[in-house]
Length: 294
Length: 311
Image (cartoon, rainbow over all chains, first blue to last red; front, side, top):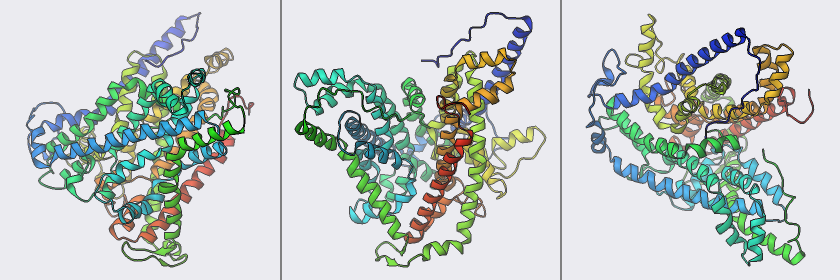
Protein backbone atom coordinates (compact mmCIF):
# COMPACT_ATOMS: atom_id res chain seq x y z
CA UNK A 1 0.00 0.00 0.00
CA UNK A 2 1.33 3.40 -0.89
CA UNK A 3 1.85 5.73 1.99
CA UNK A 4 -1.48 7.39 2.50
CA UNK A 5 -0.98 11.09 1.99
CA UNK A 6 -3.59 13.31 3.49
CA UNK A 7 -4.81 15.80 0.92
CA UNK A 8 -4.93 19.27 2.30
CA UNK A 9 -8.29 20.87 1.66
CA UNK A 10 -7.16 23.97 -0.15
CA UNK A 11 -9.86 25.79 -1.92
CA UNK A 12 -8.68 29.17 -3.14
CA UNK A 13 -5.75 28.99 -5.56
CA UNK A 14 -4.26 32.26 -6.69
CA UNK A 15 -2.10 32.26 -9.82
CA UNK A 16 0.88 33.10 -7.66
CA UNK A 17 0.23 30.12 -5.44
CA UNK A 18 -0.05 27.82 -8.45
CA UNK A 19 3.23 29.06 -9.89
CA UNK A 20 5.03 28.56 -6.59
CA UNK A 21 3.57 25.08 -6.29
CA UNK A 22 4.74 24.17 -9.76
CA UNK A 23 8.29 25.38 -9.09
CA UNK A 24 8.29 23.52 -5.83
CA UNK A 25 7.09 20.29 -7.40
CA UNK A 26 9.75 20.59 -10.09
CA UNK A 27 12.44 21.18 -7.51
CA UNK A 28 11.24 18.29 -5.38
CA UNK A 29 11.20 16.00 -8.36
CA UNK A 30 14.65 17.06 -9.50
CA UNK A 31 16.13 16.45 -6.06
CA UNK A 32 14.40 13.08 -5.76
CA UNK A 33 15.75 12.03 -9.13
CA UNK A 34 19.26 13.15 -8.21
CA UNK A 35 19.26 11.38 -4.84
CA UNK A 36 17.53 8.35 -6.34
CA UNK A 37 20.28 8.08 -8.94
CA UNK A 38 22.95 8.33 -6.23
CA UNK A 39 21.30 5.57 -4.23
CA UNK A 40 20.81 3.29 -7.23
CA UNK A 41 24.27 3.87 -8.65
CA UNK A 42 26.19 1.35 -6.51
CA UNK A 43 23.63 -1.37 -7.36
CA UNK A 44 23.74 -0.66 -11.07
CA UNK A 45 27.49 -0.35 -11.06
CA UNK A 46 27.85 -3.69 -9.27
CA UNK A 47 25.63 -5.37 -11.85
CA UNK A 48 27.35 -3.91 -14.90
CA UNK A 49 30.76 -4.61 -13.36
CA UNK A 50 29.83 -8.23 -12.74
CA UNK A 51 29.48 -8.69 -16.49
CA UNK A 52 32.82 -7.22 -17.55
CA UNK A 53 35.83 -9.09 -18.80
CA UNK A 54 38.78 -9.90 -16.58
CA UNK A 55 40.99 -6.96 -15.79
CA UNK A 56 38.13 -4.48 -16.10
CA UNK A 57 38.66 -3.40 -12.51
CA UNK A 58 41.98 -1.79 -13.37
CA UNK A 59 40.97 -0.21 -16.65
CA UNK A 60 41.00 3.53 -17.19
CA UNK A 61 38.69 5.27 -17.35
CA UNK A 62 36.40 3.18 -15.12
CA UNK A 63 33.20 2.25 -16.88
CA UNK A 64 29.66 2.37 -15.74
CA UNK A 65 27.33 1.66 -18.64
CA UNK A 66 26.45 -1.93 -19.54
CA UNK A 67 28.69 -2.45 -22.54
CA UNK A 68 29.93 -6.00 -21.91
CA UNK A 69 27.99 -9.10 -21.07
CA UNK A 70 30.28 -11.81 -19.77
CA UNK A 71 27.63 -13.92 -18.12
CA UNK A 72 30.19 -16.70 -17.73
CA UNK A 73 31.56 -14.72 -14.74
CA UNK A 74 28.70 -16.07 -12.68
CA UNK A 75 29.41 -19.80 -13.13
CA UNK A 76 33.10 -18.96 -12.77
CA UNK A 77 32.47 -17.87 -9.18
CA UNK A 78 31.29 -21.41 -8.44
CA UNK A 79 34.69 -22.69 -9.59
CA UNK A 80 36.75 -20.14 -7.69
CA UNK A 81 35.09 -20.77 -4.34
CA UNK A 82 32.66 -23.47 -3.17
CA UNK A 83 29.88 -20.96 -3.71
CA UNK A 84 27.11 -23.56 -3.73
CA UNK A 85 28.27 -24.94 -0.40
CA UNK A 86 28.49 -21.46 1.15
CA UNK A 87 25.06 -20.69 -0.21
CA UNK A 88 23.67 -23.89 1.25
CA UNK A 89 25.26 -23.10 4.62
CA UNK A 90 23.70 -19.65 4.60
CA UNK A 91 20.31 -21.08 3.70
CA UNK A 92 20.54 -23.64 6.52
CA UNK A 93 21.68 -21.15 9.15
CA UNK A 94 19.23 -18.47 8.10
CA UNK A 95 16.19 -20.71 7.86
CA UNK A 96 16.84 -22.37 11.23
CA UNK A 97 17.40 -19.00 12.88
CA UNK A 98 14.30 -17.46 11.31
CA UNK A 99 12.19 -20.46 12.29
CA UNK A 100 13.51 -20.39 15.85
CA UNK A 101 12.93 -16.68 16.19
CA UNK A 102 9.35 -16.87 14.91
CA UNK A 103 8.51 -19.78 17.16
CA UNK A 104 10.11 -18.59 20.37
CA UNK A 105 9.31 -14.91 20.03
CA UNK A 106 5.62 -15.55 19.34
CA UNK A 107 5.44 -18.06 22.19
CA UNK A 108 6.98 -15.64 24.69
CA UNK A 109 5.02 -12.69 23.34
CA UNK A 110 1.80 -14.61 23.92
CA UNK A 111 2.77 -15.00 27.57
CA UNK A 112 3.41 -11.28 27.95
CA UNK A 113 0.30 -10.25 26.03
CA UNK A 114 -2.27 -12.72 27.29
CA UNK A 115 -1.28 -14.24 30.63
CA UNK A 116 -1.29 -12.64 34.06
CA UNK A 117 1.49 -13.58 36.43
CA UNK A 118 3.41 -11.90 39.21
CA UNK A 119 6.38 -9.89 37.97
CA UNK A 120 5.10 -9.62 34.44
CA UNK A 121 5.56 -5.88 34.13
CA UNK A 122 8.98 -5.99 35.70
CA UNK A 123 10.07 -8.79 33.37
CA UNK A 124 8.72 -6.93 30.36
CA UNK A 125 10.65 -3.80 31.27
CA UNK A 126 13.70 -6.01 31.77
CA UNK A 127 13.17 -7.40 28.29
CA UNK A 128 13.01 -3.89 26.85
CA UNK A 129 16.17 -2.96 28.71
CA UNK A 130 18.09 -5.89 27.27
CA UNK A 131 17.63 -4.41 23.81
CA UNK A 132 20.01 -1.63 24.81
CA UNK A 133 22.86 -3.96 25.74
CA UNK A 134 25.56 -3.89 23.08
CA UNK A 135 26.59 -7.25 21.67
CA UNK A 136 30.31 -6.84 22.51
CA UNK A 137 29.54 -7.00 26.22
CA UNK A 138 28.37 -10.60 25.96
CA UNK A 139 30.55 -11.54 23.01
CA UNK A 140 33.55 -12.89 24.88
CA UNK A 141 31.81 -14.96 27.59
CA UNK A 142 29.40 -16.27 24.96
CA UNK A 143 32.39 -17.36 22.93
CA UNK A 144 33.85 -19.14 25.95
CA UNK A 145 30.46 -20.74 26.65
CA UNK A 146 30.04 -22.07 23.11
CA UNK A 147 33.62 -23.11 22.60
CA UNK A 148 34.68 -24.42 25.98
CA UNK A 149 31.36 -25.06 27.71
CA UNK A 150 29.33 -26.57 24.89
CA UNK A 151 32.19 -27.53 22.58
CA UNK A 152 30.33 -26.13 19.60
CA UNK A 153 32.98 -24.22 17.72
CA UNK A 154 32.71 -24.93 13.99
CA UNK A 155 29.07 -25.85 14.25
CA UNK A 156 26.02 -23.81 13.36
CA UNK A 157 24.93 -23.93 17.00
CA UNK A 158 26.12 -20.47 18.04
CA UNK A 159 24.56 -19.01 14.89
CA UNK A 160 21.16 -20.63 15.23
CA UNK A 161 20.34 -21.82 18.76
CA UNK A 162 20.11 -18.38 20.44
CA UNK A 163 17.19 -17.62 18.10
CA UNK A 164 15.17 -20.27 19.90
CA UNK A 165 15.39 -18.33 23.15
CA UNK A 166 13.29 -15.37 22.23
CA UNK A 167 15.13 -12.42 20.66
CA UNK A 168 13.92 -9.39 22.62
CA UNK A 169 12.98 -7.09 19.81
CA UNK A 170 10.77 -9.61 18.08
CA UNK A 171 9.06 -10.45 21.35
CA UNK A 172 8.36 -6.78 21.90
CA UNK A 173 7.01 -6.35 18.40
CA UNK A 174 4.77 -9.42 18.55
CA UNK A 175 3.54 -8.60 22.03
CA UNK A 176 2.45 -5.18 20.78
CA UNK A 177 0.70 -6.86 17.88
CA UNK A 178 -1.02 -9.49 20.05
CA UNK A 179 -2.33 -6.72 22.31
CA UNK A 180 -4.28 -5.38 19.36
CA UNK A 181 -6.03 -8.72 18.77
CA UNK A 182 -9.42 -8.80 20.40
CA UNK A 183 -9.62 -11.17 23.37
CA UNK A 184 -13.17 -12.18 22.51
CA UNK A 185 -11.82 -14.92 20.27
CA UNK A 186 -9.71 -16.27 23.14
CA UNK A 187 -12.69 -16.23 25.46
CA UNK A 188 -14.87 -18.04 22.94
CA UNK A 189 -12.20 -20.69 22.46
CA UNK A 190 -11.85 -21.05 26.22
CA UNK A 191 -15.57 -21.68 26.53
CA UNK A 192 -15.15 -24.41 23.93
CA UNK A 193 -12.51 -25.97 26.15
CA UNK A 194 -9.34 -24.86 24.36
CA UNK A 195 -6.33 -24.35 26.62
CA UNK A 196 -3.85 -21.50 26.29
CA UNK A 197 -1.48 -23.44 24.08
CA UNK A 198 -4.21 -24.16 21.57
CA UNK A 199 -5.33 -20.55 21.65
CA UNK A 200 -1.75 -19.50 20.94
CA UNK A 201 -1.30 -21.98 18.12
CA UNK A 202 -4.71 -22.00 16.48
CA UNK A 203 -6.08 -18.51 17.07
CA UNK A 204 -3.36 -15.97 17.73
CA UNK A 205 -0.65 -17.26 15.38
CA UNK A 206 -2.88 -17.37 12.29
CA UNK A 207 -4.10 -13.84 13.04
CA UNK A 208 -0.56 -12.60 13.51
CA UNK A 209 0.65 -13.56 10.04
CA UNK A 210 1.47 -9.99 8.94
CA UNK A 211 3.55 -9.36 12.07
CA UNK A 212 5.22 -12.75 11.77
CA UNK A 213 6.06 -12.01 8.15
CA UNK A 214 7.69 -8.73 9.14
CA UNK A 215 9.80 -10.46 11.75
CA UNK A 216 10.71 -13.25 9.36
CA UNK A 217 12.00 -10.75 6.83
CA UNK A 218 14.04 -8.74 9.30
CA UNK A 219 15.40 -11.91 10.82
CA UNK A 220 16.27 -13.27 7.39
CA UNK A 221 18.11 -10.11 6.38
CA UNK A 222 19.97 -9.88 9.70
CA UNK A 223 21.07 -13.51 9.66
CA UNK A 224 21.88 -13.60 5.98
CA UNK A 225 24.13 -10.54 6.29
CA UNK A 226 25.61 -11.36 9.69
CA UNK A 227 29.37 -11.27 9.50
CA UNK A 228 30.74 -11.00 13.03
CA UNK A 229 29.12 -14.12 14.52
CA UNK A 230 30.23 -16.53 11.79
CA UNK A 231 33.62 -14.83 11.79
CA UNK A 232 34.04 -15.63 15.47
CA UNK A 233 32.63 -19.17 15.47
CA UNK A 234 33.47 -20.63 12.07
CA UNK A 235 37.08 -21.28 11.20
CA UNK A 236 36.43 -24.37 9.05
CA UNK A 237 35.90 -22.96 5.56
CA UNK A 238 33.56 -25.85 4.73
CA UNK A 239 31.10 -24.26 7.12
CA UNK A 240 31.45 -20.67 5.94
CA UNK A 241 28.26 -18.80 5.32
CA UNK A 242 28.11 -16.68 2.18
CA UNK A 243 28.93 -13.52 4.10
CA UNK A 244 32.28 -15.04 5.04
CA UNK A 245 32.53 -16.78 1.68
CA UNK A 246 32.46 -13.70 -0.50
CA UNK A 247 35.01 -12.02 1.73
CA UNK A 248 37.07 -15.21 1.36
CA UNK A 249 36.78 -14.88 -2.43
CA UNK A 250 38.04 -11.34 -2.17
CA UNK A 251 41.17 -12.35 -0.35
CA UNK A 252 42.11 -15.64 -2.00
CA UNK A 253 42.30 -17.61 -5.21
CA UNK A 254 42.62 -14.83 -7.71
CA UNK A 255 39.42 -13.31 -6.43
CA UNK A 256 40.92 -9.86 -6.82
CA UNK A 257 39.03 -9.64 -10.11
CA UNK A 258 36.36 -6.96 -10.03
CA UNK A 259 33.95 -8.94 -12.18
CA UNK A 260 34.08 -12.09 -10.05
CA UNK A 261 33.70 -10.14 -6.83
CA UNK A 262 30.70 -8.31 -8.18
CA UNK A 263 29.13 -11.46 -9.60
CA UNK A 264 29.47 -13.10 -6.17
CA UNK A 265 28.14 -10.00 -4.42
CA UNK A 266 25.15 -9.74 -6.74
CA UNK A 267 24.31 -13.40 -6.07
CA UNK A 268 24.78 -12.80 -2.35
CA UNK A 269 22.36 -9.88 -2.11
CA UNK A 270 19.74 -11.21 -4.55
CA UNK A 271 17.85 -13.36 -2.00
CA UNK A 272 17.45 -10.36 0.33
CA UNK A 273 16.19 -8.18 -2.50
CA UNK A 274 13.77 -10.83 -3.74
CA UNK A 275 12.39 -11.45 -0.28
CA UNK A 276 12.03 -7.74 0.26
CA UNK A 277 10.08 -7.24 -2.94
CA UNK A 278 7.85 -10.22 -2.28
CA UNK A 279 6.88 -8.79 1.06
CA UNK A 280 7.56 -5.08 0.74
CA UNK A 281 4.14 -4.23 2.03
CA UNK A 282 4.77 -6.02 5.31
CA UNK A 283 8.25 -4.62 5.75
CA UNK A 284 7.41 -0.98 5.27
CA UNK A 285 4.28 -1.28 7.40
CA UNK A 286 6.26 -3.14 10.01
CA UNK A 287 8.82 -0.37 10.23
CA UNK A 288 6.17 2.31 10.25
CA UNK A 289 4.22 0.71 13.07
CA UNK A 290 7.17 -0.23 15.23
CA UNK A 291 9.76 2.42 14.54
CA UNK A 292 12.33 -0.25 13.70
CA UNK A 293 15.52 0.81 12.02
CA UNK A 294 16.32 -1.49 9.11
CA UNK B 1 5.08 3.12 21.74
CA UNK B 2 5.23 0.51 24.47
CA UNK B 3 1.95 1.08 26.11
CA UNK B 4 1.25 -1.00 29.15
CA UNK B 5 -2.36 -1.40 28.17
CA UNK B 6 -2.61 -4.54 30.19
CA UNK B 7 -5.70 -3.90 32.21
CA UNK B 8 -8.85 -3.63 30.16
CA UNK B 9 -9.50 -7.26 29.42
CA UNK B 10 -11.30 -10.36 30.58
CA UNK B 11 -11.91 -9.69 34.25
CA UNK B 12 -14.61 -12.36 34.24
CA UNK B 13 -12.08 -15.19 33.92
CA UNK B 14 -10.37 -14.12 37.11
CA UNK B 15 -12.22 -16.41 39.47
CA UNK B 16 -9.98 -17.28 42.34
CA UNK B 17 -6.49 -17.97 43.53
CA UNK B 18 -6.35 -21.50 42.18
CA UNK B 19 -7.15 -20.31 38.70
CA UNK B 20 -4.81 -17.38 39.14
CA UNK B 21 -1.99 -19.71 40.16
CA UNK B 22 -2.66 -21.90 37.17
CA UNK B 23 -2.61 -18.89 34.86
CA UNK B 24 0.61 -17.64 36.41
CA UNK B 25 2.23 -21.02 35.96
CA UNK B 26 1.23 -21.19 32.31
CA UNK B 27 2.38 -17.60 31.89
CA UNK B 28 5.82 -18.54 33.16
CA UNK B 29 5.87 -21.52 30.80
CA UNK B 30 5.16 -19.18 27.90
CA UNK B 31 7.93 -16.77 28.76
CA UNK B 32 10.38 -19.49 29.81
CA UNK B 33 12.30 -19.59 26.50
CA UNK B 34 13.15 -15.94 26.88
CA UNK B 35 13.83 -16.28 30.60
CA UNK B 36 16.26 -19.16 29.98
CA UNK B 37 17.85 -17.27 27.12
CA UNK B 38 18.14 -14.19 29.29
CA UNK B 39 19.99 -16.10 31.99
CA UNK B 40 22.19 -18.21 29.70
CA UNK B 41 22.97 -15.81 26.87
CA UNK B 42 22.70 -12.43 28.55
CA UNK B 43 22.77 -12.16 32.34
CA UNK B 44 25.32 -14.96 32.73
CA UNK B 45 27.67 -13.65 30.05
CA UNK B 46 27.33 -10.09 31.37
CA UNK B 47 28.37 -11.17 34.85
CA UNK B 48 31.12 -13.35 33.42
CA UNK B 49 32.28 -10.43 31.32
CA UNK B 50 32.38 -8.19 34.40
CA UNK B 51 34.42 -10.84 36.22
CA UNK B 52 36.77 -11.40 33.28
CA UNK B 53 37.41 -7.68 33.01
CA UNK B 54 39.20 -7.94 36.36
CA UNK B 55 41.35 -10.85 35.26
CA UNK B 56 44.04 -11.73 32.86
CA UNK B 57 42.53 -14.51 30.81
CA UNK B 58 43.71 -16.47 27.83
CA UNK B 59 41.59 -19.38 26.60
CA UNK B 60 42.95 -22.65 27.94
CA UNK B 61 44.46 -21.05 31.03
CA UNK B 62 42.73 -20.13 34.26
CA UNK B 63 41.78 -16.50 34.69
CA UNK B 64 44.16 -14.65 37.00
CA UNK B 65 42.67 -11.91 39.17
CA UNK B 66 44.41 -8.62 38.43
CA UNK B 67 42.03 -6.13 40.05
CA UNK B 68 41.66 -2.91 38.11
CA UNK B 69 44.81 -3.50 36.07
CA UNK B 70 42.89 -3.88 32.80
CA UNK B 71 41.13 -0.58 33.38
CA UNK B 72 44.26 1.30 34.38
CA UNK B 73 46.01 -0.27 31.40
CA UNK B 74 43.66 1.60 29.08
CA UNK B 75 45.00 4.92 30.31
CA UNK B 76 48.41 4.06 28.94
CA UNK B 77 47.16 2.38 25.78
CA UNK B 78 47.60 4.67 22.79
CA UNK B 79 45.65 2.36 20.48
CA UNK B 80 42.75 2.42 22.92
CA UNK B 81 42.66 6.21 22.87
CA UNK B 82 43.06 6.17 19.15
CA UNK B 83 40.21 3.73 18.54
CA UNK B 84 37.98 5.67 20.89
CA UNK B 85 38.77 8.87 19.03
CA UNK B 86 38.19 7.31 15.61
CA UNK B 87 34.84 5.91 16.74
CA UNK B 88 33.76 9.15 18.43
CA UNK B 89 34.65 11.31 15.45
CA UNK B 90 32.87 8.90 13.14
CA UNK B 91 29.80 8.92 15.38
CA UNK B 92 29.79 12.71 15.72
CA UNK B 93 29.86 13.15 11.96
CA UNK B 94 27.88 10.26 10.60
CA UNK B 95 24.95 10.23 13.04
CA UNK B 96 23.88 13.91 12.68
CA UNK B 97 24.64 13.90 8.97
CA UNK B 98 22.64 10.70 8.55
CA UNK B 99 19.68 12.25 10.37
CA UNK B 100 19.80 15.38 8.22
CA UNK B 101 19.98 13.41 4.99
CA UNK B 102 17.24 11.04 6.14
CA UNK B 103 14.99 13.94 7.14
CA UNK B 104 15.62 15.75 3.86
CA UNK B 105 14.79 12.64 1.86
CA UNK B 106 11.73 11.95 3.98
CA UNK B 107 10.47 15.49 3.46
CA UNK B 108 11.02 15.22 -0.27
CA UNK B 109 9.13 11.93 -0.32
CA UNK B 110 6.37 13.40 1.80
CA UNK B 111 5.49 15.82 -1.00
CA UNK B 112 2.83 14.30 -3.16
CA UNK B 113 4.90 13.49 -6.21
CA UNK B 114 4.28 10.70 -8.70
CA UNK B 115 6.48 7.67 -8.16
CA UNK B 116 6.71 8.23 -4.43
CA UNK B 117 6.64 4.49 -3.80
CA UNK B 118 9.38 3.86 -6.29
CA UNK B 119 11.69 6.40 -4.65
CA UNK B 120 10.93 5.06 -1.20
CA UNK B 121 11.99 1.62 -2.39
CA UNK B 122 15.14 3.02 -3.97
CA UNK B 123 16.14 4.76 -0.74
CA UNK B 124 15.33 1.75 1.39
CA UNK B 125 17.02 -0.93 -0.71
CA UNK B 126 20.60 -0.34 0.48
CA UNK B 127 19.48 -1.06 4.05
CA UNK B 128 18.82 -4.63 2.96
CA UNK B 129 22.42 -5.39 2.21
CA UNK B 130 24.41 -3.93 5.08
CA UNK B 131 27.78 -5.42 5.83
CA UNK B 132 29.94 -7.49 3.55
CA UNK B 133 28.29 -6.65 0.26
CA UNK B 134 28.44 -2.92 0.97
CA UNK B 135 32.08 -3.24 1.95
CA UNK B 136 33.07 -5.12 -1.19
CA UNK B 137 31.25 -2.77 -3.55
CA UNK B 138 32.48 0.43 -1.90
CA UNK B 139 36.05 -0.77 -1.65
CA UNK B 140 36.03 -0.58 -5.46
CA UNK B 141 33.92 2.53 -5.77
CA UNK B 142 36.32 4.48 -3.54
CA UNK B 143 39.44 3.15 -5.21
CA UNK B 144 41.79 6.09 -5.72
CA UNK B 145 42.75 5.33 -9.29
CA UNK B 146 40.07 3.07 -10.68
CA UNK B 147 37.01 3.98 -8.61
CA UNK B 148 34.01 5.73 -10.10
CA UNK B 149 33.84 8.30 -7.29
CA UNK B 150 37.19 9.78 -8.18
CA UNK B 151 36.40 9.38 -11.86
CA UNK B 152 33.29 11.52 -11.34
CA UNK B 153 35.37 14.06 -9.44
CA UNK B 154 37.93 14.12 -12.25
CA UNK B 155 35.16 14.93 -14.73
CA UNK B 156 34.65 18.13 -12.75
CA UNK B 157 38.32 18.91 -13.36
CA UNK B 158 39.33 18.12 -9.79
CA UNK B 159 41.50 15.41 -8.30
CA UNK B 160 39.80 13.14 -5.81
CA UNK B 161 41.49 12.15 -2.56
CA UNK B 162 42.94 8.72 -1.88
CA UNK B 163 39.85 7.85 0.13
CA UNK B 164 40.75 4.48 1.59
CA UNK B 165 44.51 4.86 1.37
CA UNK B 166 44.85 8.30 2.96
CA UNK B 167 44.46 8.36 6.75
CA UNK B 168 43.00 11.86 6.55
CA UNK B 169 40.19 10.73 4.26
CA UNK B 170 39.34 7.18 5.28
CA UNK B 171 36.78 8.12 7.90
CA UNK B 172 34.98 10.39 5.44
CA UNK B 173 34.72 7.51 3.01
CA UNK B 174 33.11 5.49 5.79
CA UNK B 175 30.73 8.35 6.56
CA UNK B 176 29.64 8.49 2.91
CA UNK B 177 29.12 4.73 2.95
CA UNK B 178 26.98 5.02 6.06
CA UNK B 179 24.82 7.62 4.33
CA UNK B 180 23.94 5.06 1.70
CA UNK B 181 22.13 3.07 4.38
CA UNK B 182 19.89 5.82 5.80
CA UNK B 183 16.81 4.23 4.23
CA UNK B 184 15.55 2.73 7.47
CA UNK B 185 15.56 6.14 9.12
CA UNK B 186 13.93 7.71 6.06
CA UNK B 187 11.00 5.32 6.37
CA UNK B 188 10.56 6.11 10.07
CA UNK B 189 10.70 9.84 9.36
CA UNK B 190 8.10 9.56 6.61
CA UNK B 191 5.77 7.86 9.05
CA UNK B 192 6.42 10.61 11.59
CA UNK B 193 5.85 13.38 9.05
CA UNK B 194 2.57 11.85 8.02
CA UNK B 195 1.52 11.90 11.65
CA UNK B 196 1.79 15.69 11.87
CA UNK B 197 -1.76 17.09 11.74
CA UNK B 198 -2.36 19.11 8.58
CA UNK B 199 -4.48 21.50 10.64
CA UNK B 200 -1.33 22.79 12.37
CA UNK B 201 0.20 23.85 9.05
CA UNK B 202 -3.04 25.43 7.91
CA UNK B 203 -3.36 27.40 11.10
CA UNK B 204 0.22 28.58 10.70
CA UNK B 205 -0.43 29.57 7.10
CA UNK B 206 -3.36 31.67 8.19
CA UNK B 207 -0.94 33.41 10.53
CA UNK B 208 1.32 34.01 7.57
CA UNK B 209 4.06 31.50 8.43
CA UNK B 210 6.44 30.68 5.60
CA UNK B 211 7.93 27.30 4.71
CA UNK B 212 11.01 27.65 6.86
CA UNK B 213 9.09 28.81 9.92
CA UNK B 214 6.59 26.00 9.51
CA UNK B 215 9.45 23.52 9.36
CA UNK B 216 11.17 24.99 12.40
CA UNK B 217 8.12 25.53 14.60
CA UNK B 218 5.80 22.71 13.57
CA UNK B 219 7.56 19.91 11.71
CA UNK B 220 10.66 19.63 13.88
CA UNK B 221 8.91 19.76 17.27
CA UNK B 222 6.21 17.34 16.13
CA UNK B 223 8.67 14.71 14.94
CA UNK B 224 11.25 15.32 17.68
CA UNK B 225 10.42 12.09 19.56
CA UNK B 226 11.30 10.12 16.44
CA UNK B 227 14.47 12.16 15.98
CA UNK B 228 15.46 11.27 19.54
CA UNK B 229 14.83 7.59 18.81
CA UNK B 230 16.88 7.72 15.61
CA UNK B 231 19.65 9.61 17.40
CA UNK B 232 19.97 7.08 20.20
CA UNK B 233 19.78 3.98 18.00
CA UNK B 234 22.21 5.68 15.62
CA UNK B 235 24.78 6.33 18.33
CA UNK B 236 24.44 2.78 19.66
CA UNK B 237 24.93 1.37 16.17
CA UNK B 238 27.89 3.53 15.12
CA UNK B 239 29.75 2.81 18.33
CA UNK B 240 29.60 -0.83 17.26
CA UNK B 241 30.88 -0.33 13.72
CA UNK B 242 32.81 -3.41 12.73
CA UNK B 243 32.23 -5.38 9.53
CA UNK B 244 32.85 -2.65 6.99
CA UNK B 245 36.08 -1.52 8.64
CA UNK B 246 37.25 -5.09 9.15
CA UNK B 247 36.64 -6.01 5.52
CA UNK B 248 37.70 -2.91 3.60
CA UNK B 249 40.65 -1.49 5.47
CA UNK B 250 41.10 -3.79 8.47
CA UNK B 251 41.72 -0.74 10.60
CA UNK B 252 44.15 0.94 8.22
CA UNK B 253 45.66 2.95 6.75
CA UNK B 254 47.83 3.92 9.72
CA UNK B 255 44.98 2.85 12.03
CA UNK B 256 42.74 5.55 10.58
CA UNK B 257 39.77 3.17 10.65
CA UNK B 258 40.67 1.32 13.84
CA UNK B 259 37.15 1.41 15.23
CA UNK B 260 36.65 0.57 18.89
CA UNK B 261 35.00 -2.77 18.22
CA UNK B 262 37.72 -3.72 15.77
CA UNK B 263 40.35 -3.06 18.42
CA UNK B 264 38.30 -5.02 20.92
CA UNK B 265 37.96 -7.89 18.45
CA UNK B 266 41.71 -7.98 17.91
CA UNK B 267 42.38 -8.08 21.61
CA UNK B 268 39.90 -10.89 22.11
CA UNK B 269 40.32 -13.07 19.05
CA UNK B 270 43.71 -12.23 17.55
CA UNK B 271 45.77 -11.75 20.69
CA UNK B 272 43.48 -13.69 23.04
CA UNK B 273 43.69 -10.94 25.65
CA UNK B 274 40.19 -11.78 26.76
CA UNK B 275 40.42 -10.09 30.14
CA UNK B 276 41.50 -6.80 28.63
CA UNK B 277 38.95 -7.17 25.84
CA UNK B 278 36.21 -7.69 28.44
CA UNK B 279 37.25 -4.49 30.17
CA UNK B 280 37.08 -2.72 26.80
CA UNK B 281 33.61 -4.18 26.26
CA UNK B 282 32.44 -2.89 29.62
CA UNK B 283 33.80 0.54 28.91
CA UNK B 284 31.94 0.50 25.58
CA UNK B 285 28.79 -0.43 27.44
CA UNK B 286 29.36 2.44 29.84
CA UNK B 287 30.01 4.92 27.04
CA UNK B 288 26.87 3.87 25.18
CA UNK B 289 24.81 4.02 28.38
CA UNK B 290 26.13 7.50 29.22
CA UNK B 291 25.54 8.79 25.69
CA UNK B 292 21.99 7.41 25.68
CA UNK B 293 21.42 8.85 29.15
CA UNK B 294 22.64 12.30 28.16
CA UNK B 295 20.50 12.26 25.01
CA UNK B 296 17.45 11.18 26.99
CA UNK B 297 18.02 13.80 29.68
CA UNK B 298 18.63 16.52 27.13
CA UNK B 299 15.42 15.52 25.39
CA UNK B 300 13.43 17.40 28.04
CA UNK B 301 14.75 20.52 26.42
CA UNK B 302 14.06 19.75 22.78
CA UNK B 303 11.67 16.84 22.44
CA UNK B 304 8.03 17.77 22.24
CA UNK B 305 5.52 15.18 23.36
CA UNK B 306 2.05 15.86 22.10
CA UNK B 307 -0.47 15.71 24.91
CA UNK B 308 1.97 16.65 27.65
CA UNK B 309 1.23 20.35 27.38
CA UNK B 310 2.99 22.92 25.30
CA UNK B 311 6.45 24.14 26.11
